[in-house]
Length: 105
Image (cartoon, rainbow, N blue to C red; front, side):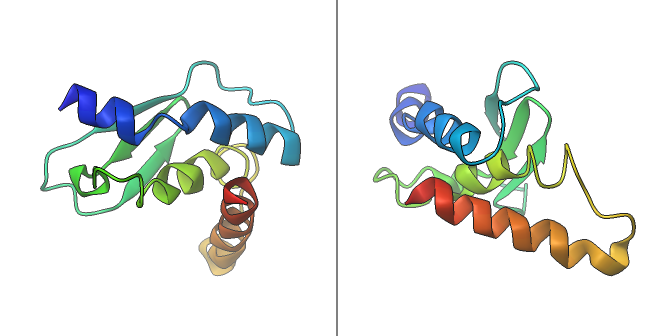
């Protein structure tokens, strides 16, 4: 499983570098990904320095690594700057999807 994860997430450093070029330097320290048990029912959940991910993102062909790009984007749009209330939560996800897609270009 470790080898599969290493292959699947080999582009993570490139995603972080791309995000830093789009926004600002990554301020949280080391970035890690933790694959949780299959009962974790979300694609990913960002936390400063650590993304929780479902094992279903380990597809073997890197086709689902956009989840990692999305969670990396949350390091700026959600963790560093966020909405004042749930009423404007769409701003958090909207900007995150925008940055995710720029990272993946």
